Image 1 (cartoon, rainbow, N blue to C red):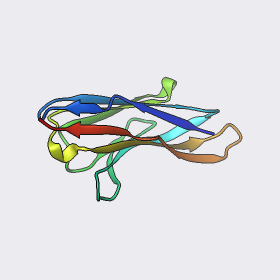
Image 2 (image 1 turned 120 degrees about the horizontal axis):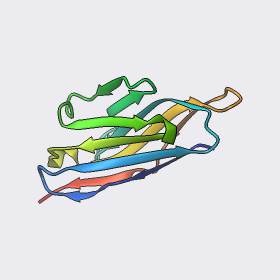
Image 3 (image 1 turned 135 degrees about the vertical axis):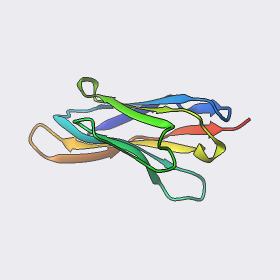
Image 4 (image 1 turned 180 degrees about the vertical axis):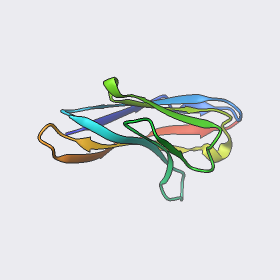
Length: 120
């Protein structure tokens, strides 16, 4: 079973920065896409940013120019550098990964979520 462990959330003032990390483990053969999603209270979970194994990225319009997603394939780890944070970025941030097991079966897994709060 694939496990995704997130870290790096916390409380930050408006205009500040945070960097989230997510490490995947559990008999993985390959990971195709890794990404970050977020869910604010009373709202649906939404895409923040995704990155493929080849480094292609896609961002939500609301975070373009402020957030940067990156990954280290050898470590099965994805990062989200968040700059110029605003209160509207407050949410639980979830890591997601999809890929394949050694026998070829697919997987798609979610992390447990990490809280990001932007407040003065």
